[in-house]
Image 1 (tube, rainbow, N blue to C red):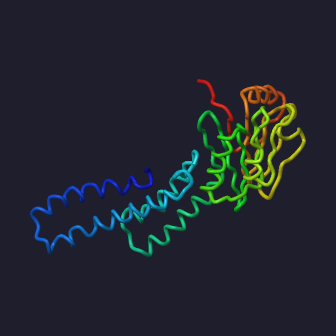
Image 2: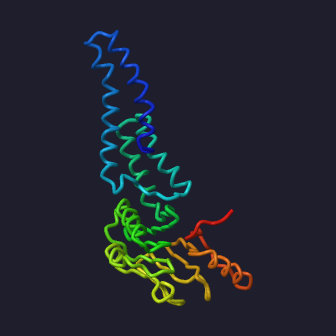
Image 3: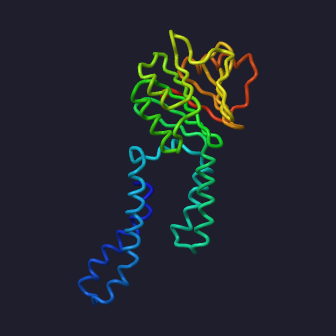
Length: 251
């Protein structure tokens, strides 16, 4: 709906005027007057048809950074303003750059949280829950971003998942809690090219996710956040790019 919204306003007004023109204008003039309306309606139909083929007819973007949104809008302006064909072709480079550089996608739904990390065609996922609904949403999230199989997936749910085959179908490597233990042990590093996860500090459930040069700190629970705050009073802090919470914070 949001993708077609910029086209609906310029389509609605000419369509209303065309209803009056049919009554007063000569039949020979109508094809010329209604031509732009027909082309705009066709463009909306093409967009709706393409979106309907996405999993769930949704593109889960999470909360992109402001500069990514600005870059995307800049690339779409020549199309919305009807610029020359040459300029519109060059604007596709700007749009593709914005989509390619959007390397971290954070999604929150149904009280669950997912973080999709992407780097140079590879991808990994962190999920706050490991149930069937979380797995289906993770599959949709990976599919709409063009990833058939993830390098690895980490489940932060303290309860062992009973749908492990679903997660194994999604990722080559699945790290999930077993027998009350954390998904990865302290000192262990879950690593593929450009993507790595490990514990942020000793004696803490907080995790450090590295996506290329970016470093995210992940807190699966409020206790993990409180523990790290206590430790950082006496230990030096690391340089962190962003923070992800696997829970809904209180006021």
